[in-house]
Length: 473
Image (cartoon, rainbow, N blue to C red; front, top):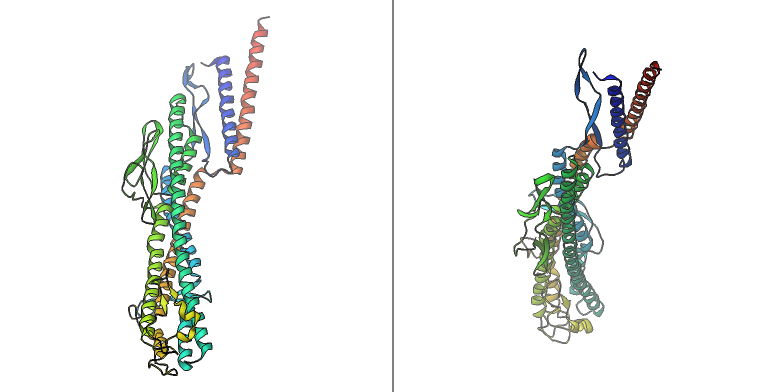
């Protein structure tokens, strides 16, 4: 049987159990605003049973462990969704920057009867489409009064403005591509830092758990936060290592094995584009998700398509206007001059001789007939000529904007859906591992009262022992 000394020890163990409960409740309260923290609880079990006069008799309780309220399935899902969210978020950001570079606000989209998407509510007021229309309108005005120097000067102003807008647009898109390259460079550094942090936490966890025999809950919380942070940049493959460590692979390449970083990533250039690879290899690393992948896809698909389309429009405009203009005659009878210089959006310009002397514009189709408007009229009619897949140049630019707008709209919708998924998963995890102030205060009060009762048990046994001792006097 226990005897008084056994009961005294039971009271002491009970005080230790309640003290541990208070300590854990205090730890939970201290981390109530820590998003990486998972609520902990004291695992209490009945201590050993001893043989008594009337049968087996309990000896109280003891703390067996401190348990972190985590769900590994939810953690894995949140980590995987972090990669998807990071990819969509970076795509949205890049496409929004591109929208600003286009100088076009896409308000809404509509789909035509034949499935062709058309941009509606294209704002900006001074977009490339407006400048193209202004150029052809100036050609039309010149055809109505081919000898007017005022009309010729207006034409030069509109043409020079259009050429400048082409160059600015190409420059903005090129600058954005360079900024996206720099973003990839920066995020590669963040990836490597996260890998270092995870390996370091692996080492601390394995050491502490080997020494204590328990679970290093706080360190595991910190490691999970680092893993989820890393997953925002790249898609991860995780596996269990030895001693509680986590192995990490990216794109099929092992990066962390137990407590060591065995490989890192680096940025490398292919032409004027930045990609990533494992540092010890020469091949592209297929990361499949995360913000780096989203940035690469936005740069290489949507942004590249817009730039190629604009260059194509500029190239056709230059070639067609020059071919028509070169066949005409100026007011002084000269012929054969090009209207535009350059070959694409980056190099387009207006013949400086025409800017300096608008009388050299070759609007006439007959030598010596200064009042003839044949070439000016042909130049104006280019606005209605279908050059690109049955579309005029203005329509082709509108289609480019519409296609880009659809890409941005799709990403916006996908990201909104992804936000919903993320909120649901985090809500589920918070319901398991989130710290509730009300619950912790209740536990704190319960452990406090139990501690006081255990102390009272010890006081009672002490009084009983004192009574026994005094009986022998």
